[in-house]
Amino acid sequence: MSKEDKIIILDFGSQYTQLIARRVREVGVFSVILPSDVSIEKIQSFNPNGIILSGGPETVTESGTPKINKGLFDTDIPLLGICYGMQTMAQELGGTVIQSDKREFGHATISRINNSILFDEVKFKNDTLDVWMSHGDKVSIIPNDFNPIAESNNCPIAAFAHTDKDWFGLQFHPEVTHTDEGIKIIENFVYKICNCQKNWDITNIIDGMKSYVASTVKDEKVILGLSGGVDSSVVAMLLHQCIKDNLTCIFVDNGLLRLNEAAQVMETFAKHMGINVIRIDAESRFLKVLKGVSDPEEKRKIIGVEFIKIFEEQAKSLEDTKWLAQGTIYPDVIESAGVETGKAHVIKSHHNVGGLPDNMKMELVEPLRELFKDEVRKIGIELGLPKSLVYRHPFPGPGLGVRILGEVKKEYADLLRLADNIYIEELREHDLYDDVSQAFSVFLPVRSVGVMGDTRKYDYVIALRAVVTVDFMTAHWAHLPYEFLEKVSNRIINEVEGISRVTYDISGKPPATIEWE
Image (cartoon, rainbow, N blue to C red):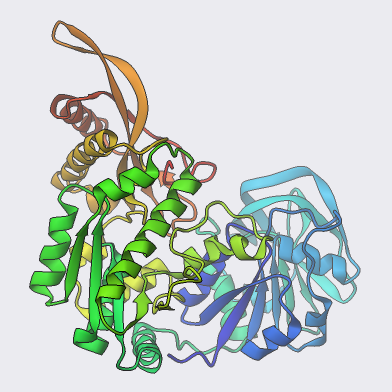
């Protein structure tokens, strides 16, 4: 995989940081996210073409908040500060950042006030552009040698540029799809300012992964935790093509899968693809360790640990197995970054990130660790996986464990499986499945009154969730037809004994998450 050209994103703790990395990759250039306090030596070892400074939840003017490394200004590397990244640039270079009396969150309009290469071929309408803002602070005094290049009603310095150096700042977020021409602004920085070539494509990625496997694993044996989701499925297909019979997949039925999921996985991989798959029925084992646990973070970790224990047990029965493969992808790594650094704002830890127990004798192999979900899906199609599997809605690693609120019980899981299956069936029947990015049911462990004929009873509640999103970082609730929701609700209440009420979640992300947990 050619990585001669690359962009580094320095993370100041923003939820949007991943979006920046994805947008850079979308235009054909490799990107990598590093913590904001990484050393200059480490940055230079990557030999980046440019650096983007992310947004962040902190306030530049307060003590103890992340600051830009001043050593960056002694290099010749082009810099683009976004939101917090712009503010910390300004402050370190002698400008002033103040708390704004009028905050801007959501849609805003900027006006171009000076030409800049950053805005080349950007389609302003009467010199204005609709953008996405998310800030409470703003630059009030511009540093020496900088010119303002855009303004908004509430932010006189909405963008600036150094007159002699390739240093730029944007108060708005070009990486968010709500910003008109945002991708063009990113292209201008990546192509015209950083002089990157478009060399990050599927062929390069696959060749690079196969080289990684060949140089890492060689002719040694590997076991893979196969969940049936797209990430682990792609790893299974890749490793099978690379090492053939040296791969053994372990499929664990933890009792938290979709309806008939276990049978479908065995049918797809063992029968049709000829991959060696060992099925482990472990429902009772997982339910036992989850008994009495209601915190979603704790559930995730317990499930992850139990998976690892099972893989280790199986590895002992497979002679000379040195490697454990996982379908870890880049968002998993970044989302969990704060677990290791203690500095990032972490929304949730990921169940399969963070290495293996010290006493485990296997080593990790993670071919997808540098990739985003959309890249993984393209690779899956290229490797020959069925489209129905590759483009199936995401299913969390802990499965129904985080779609059952509170304690996980078999009764709850069984009810949820049936309700969720009806929901997905109807989405497919009405040709709505591919119109939404993710849809699923959530079990609420509360009882609500229901009337069935002359019988008054108190049964559980199911919440339906469906979202539309490009990047899974922001998401709108899907505007499914009322008639469709009515049919799904009636089917669930009539066909799933134990459910008396169905609700539909209309929360957007943010502030809500996609999963309920």
